[in-house]
Image (cartoon, rainbow, N blue to C red; front, side, top):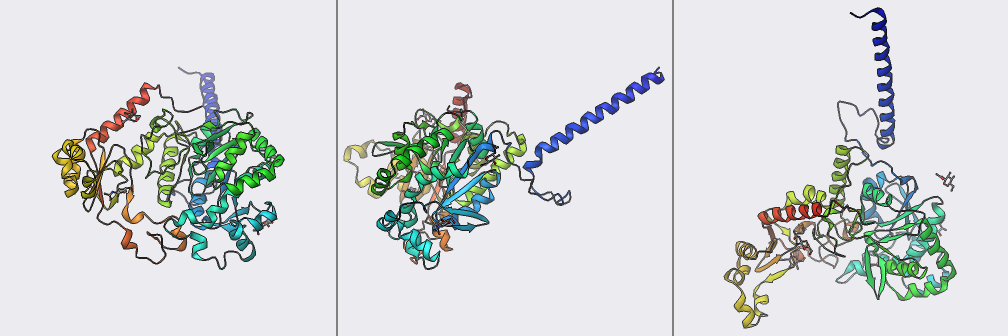
Amino acid sequence: MLGQKGMRRRWFRLVVVSIILTISFMLYLDHFRPLIASYPSSSSISSPKPTRVCPDLFTSDNVAVILRTGATESQEKLPVQFDTVMSCVSDFIVYSDFNETVHGFETHDILSGVDEAIKDKATEFALYKHLRDHGREGLSYETMYGSGPSGAEENAGWKLDKWKFLPMVDRALQDRANATWFVFTEGDTYMLWQNMLAYLAKFDATKPYYLGKHMYINNILFGHGGSGFVLSRPAAEIVSHHWRQHMREYDAFTQSEWAGDAILGKVIKDAGIDMFWSFPHLQGDSLTTIDWNVTKLEREPWCYAPTTFHHMNEAEFRQLWKFERQWLTKWGPGGGPAPRFRDIFKSLVLPKLHPEVADWDNLSSGTEYSESALAKLSAEEKNVLDQTEREAHLSFQNCRSACENSPTCLQFSFNNGVCFTSKEVKLGHSVDSSCLEYSNAAGKCIKSSKEGSDPAATAKPGIASGWVMSRIARYVSDLDQSCQNKGEKDWVI
Ligand SMILES: *[C@@H]1O[C@H](CO)[C@@H](O)[C@H](O)[C@H]1NC(C)=O
Ligand SMILES: *[C@@H]1O[C@H](CO)[C@@H](O)[C@H](O)[C@H]1NC(C)=O
Ligand SMILES: *[C@@H]1O[C@H](CO)[C@@H](O)[C@H](O)[C@H]1NC(C)=O
Ligand SMILES: CC(=O)N[C@H]1CO[C@H](CO)[C@@H](O)[C@@H]1O
């Protein structure tokens, strides 16, 4: 039997426990507050809005993200950036060739400090001067989007872009006086913020670091711009100091080169800092073009956590964004394990692979079977072809048979007498989604390079693709197994 004393003790214990619980709950809410800040609490129980979940901040107080863009692409590419990736980034700044407001955010002219003599001499600055003097008014289609067979490459904005890299590093140091990391990214670069933060937390920011996706031009090793690259503060300071000492020299160098990321890479190297090879965390493909087992530096991406994808279009931004939200919702704002390539493949790619998908551009680029490809073979080479290979170009079904008969073939595509088989797994995209880069900015999806030409002329409505599903299952389980053999090592540090 409980005496009065016992009852009181029990009562007391109950009160203490509830106080502790209440405090824990408040702390818990507090923990989440910054993450759910921008949603009005009135969107209550009746209409459960998806909460905007952002990853926990880890070290992000000190990570500044620098988004580099230009007036010829900003209106097309930035809105989805701001709506998705950047909405979780606590501190970012946009550098451009033009001062303007895009989708509510300022873009800052980063070229104002370039020597006026160069602006007069270098033809790339025609666009800059036009923007400075007249704004967007009067920019012709050709100036904005280029012309000729590779419009995007002739884009005046792209040519001007190389001048931004060195001033950008220098300005970022001033504009973000206490950032410890600078992450440099582009309009169509999708950054997985959770993974980026987790990755940077593994490095010592007090040392000079230059993290990049390796690329070479004329024997210069540099971090590819579209894949994103990262400088620690000490690295940025060394580079900026070195640049200021040799500005004339590097202006001349910039004039003679064409790729700004390579120019910066050279200066970083000259300043005595070696690039850290961050593939596959930083990489240059999109969800639709990446070969999911692309192996470089003896690293297969599968087991690793991606921090960037490049060439991402709006639809891909939204898909990956949704995936990240679901991941964070599942694991909480700490994020749980970093999502890896394999998680993204299983969620966003695998469900789209089928034995036959109509109007789907394959990206299969292995063996070609067609009348013309057959005609190029010697008699000897023809002899080793089996029946299915000789007839692969005759129908979708025949193309599939050729793929199935070749033990390493994983996917194939067929279009009007042309069959491609491939040992790589790539998602590809639907035929009508392949607009010319930048053409969306002109308010329409242009599929060929000349404005006004008939899109139907270049669209390939007949194209269909397929995967050998039993082998895809095997591919996934083999790669999963390889991660286990590696002991779940998921960071290159
Ligand atoms: C952008 O604004 C800055 C600061 O106000 C100014 O120095 C620069 O000349 C402007 N750039 C252009 C192209 O108007
Ligand atoms: C960052 O620098 C600004 C001045 O540039 C200063 O006011 C602020 O306190 C600093 N913040 C931190 C976290 O050090
Ligand atoms: C992935 O690529 C590596 C390296 O090329 C290769 O050894 C491995 O067999 C590939 N895995 C699968 C499942 O295709
Ligand atoms: C059959 C067919 O049209 N295949 C296409 C698949 O994609 C590659 C790369 O885009 C094209 O070169 C092929 O023509």
